[in-house]
Image: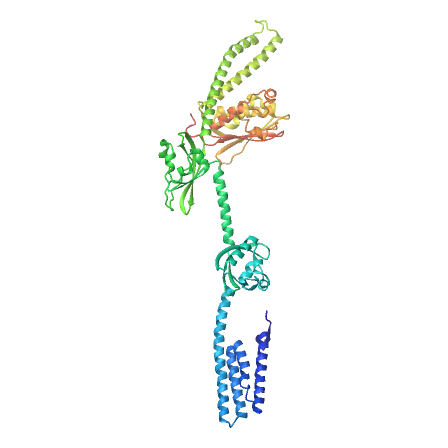
Length: 599
């Protein structure tokens, strides 16, 4: 890189200084030699000497070279008049030589300007090009020149590249080998894609095009295509992933364009039994059950369609072998090859519906069995309870001793327990059938809770705290809500550890749509795995022990859940093992649609 010095405000390079010194030296040498030659009448070379400084100056500085040629012509003419005058022939000759100085300088300056302009133009193109350009020797692969774009692309400086061989720019040997094969064919090759190695070792995708300038000198352009290749690789990876997802998806995937099947994944082909060529291009409508074809929506194929897509739709399909299968369809608008299309996710629910129907039949059969068994069990209990009542109420008449009466009282208590169980079974059976109506009324919640606690004696069995607003009222079926709260209080007392602490509280803001009445205990708690089971019939937190320990069979929570669901509410449970549980009744503030308060 050239260095510069400042002389009287002018920035002058060291190269220019050397050239000026050479031009000045040559000029004054020519003047001295010419003066000496003219003084001694040597007429051989003194005129031609001036062409050395003139041509040298005009080549590097065309305009200033003309000034030097004029200066040399004047000096030469003065010297001629001094030494040649009064030789008219000699003066004419020297004048012609002086004019020739200027003419030769003008001609050289003209062609030099042309060459410099052309060179500057090509150098500007070469340096500011938006692609890399490199000149290298075909035999040695030495880089003769490389522009700054290529240096920036590979992370080198412009001085680094000429010291490297062109073959060292390749990242992989396979790309290098292919390049040598093409280069050896002696043909000009466009659009050769390969990878170059950056200075940090990272690969960068490039497109090479080369042609021979001379026998061994090759000009090669380098286009950066790294972003495009990375985008293509990402697109290819996305396509592979998309293909793997669609082809291995457990659900059926369809793409409809103009209401015709554009794509069907293997799951849909297995679902219908048709081959790809039997599906592609066909309307999905023709694979539907005839009775469901009118329910299938037809989609507009205009790009600006704003019609809403249908929601989840259940339709029947007819398979290739004539079997009827039921499926749920989900619709989504997409673009397929630039055109509007519809993506359909199809879930086969045939087996689910069959299983659902089987379960419903089993439930109906179970309810029938429960109802029958309960009725059959309750029938013989009536006379037993009657006889036990006679014996215990009039022991003297029937000769019953005190010890026998104690035994009979215990029997009567257990028979009454069996009666309550049978009644719960019958009630649950009726609830499952949906034949129990609700009788809505507006009632005071604190008064209802007091009635329940007094009747059940819960105040004496536990430390019971009631935190309920005195003016709180529910618009619901009072008898059924009373049964629910009584069941939960009974569970809270029976499952709590001494000292038993039970708290009934109410939380609900005025803007909320649900009442929230909570019953918290300090009992044994319920595990997470048991939370989903406790509302099922005959399920207890520890059915192996607690049914005997706490004298329960697991029907009260099932009945309570159904009562609250009939009102449009639900019951939530928070529990920590060995710390206690909180059951919360969520009851709508507005009565369920279709009921009135006097129903």
